Image: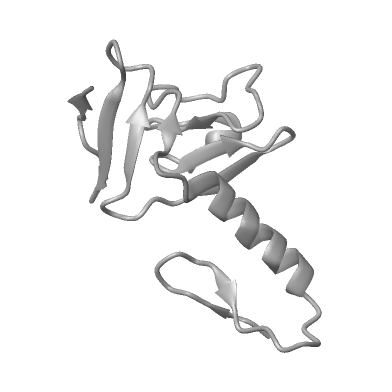
Length: 121
């Protein structure tokens, strides 16, 4: 049996014979690889439906009234794994760069209720 770190959601504390160790550790490593980079790059945060042909690793923030695979996932971080959308709720204070906004993108911050308007880079 494992425990969950409350801030990051990462699993830890398995006993040597824990049955789910491999699956939980794989999920931890994927989350770290996708989110723990120096900068989180978001392709777009104005779409309400998933794009038709995302590339593996593409990240979006579904806009209000999202539909399809994004329904109910508004303001979360949606990352295309190569075969399915994976969603991560962002915590207040997380930073990201919305690359489609402005010439060089905008630095955005997760605030209560959504994301900030952003600062042009």
